[in-house]
Image (cartoon, rainbow, N blue to C red; front, side, top):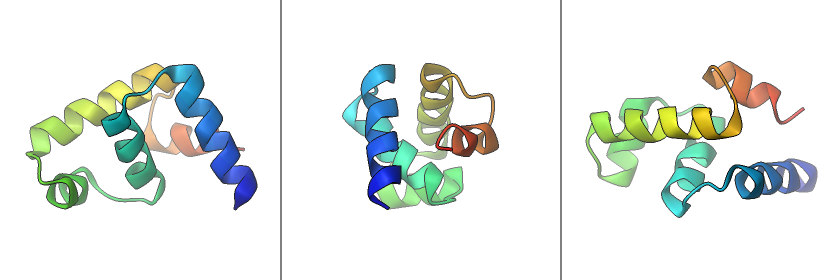
Length: 72
């Protein structure tokens, strides 16, 4: 758990993610759908999708699966 948290923290810092993007990343890693993320953060689905694309782009991942692979 501490290793995963350290790895996520390092990825966030190196990718220069905003606070909202860090929040989105955490929810993506928990397996939340874009719709669930939108509901939880009280934003529209389109905005959640925008943030997801931004996170994936900044960390160099092509998909949500690829994002999880980066933690290994």
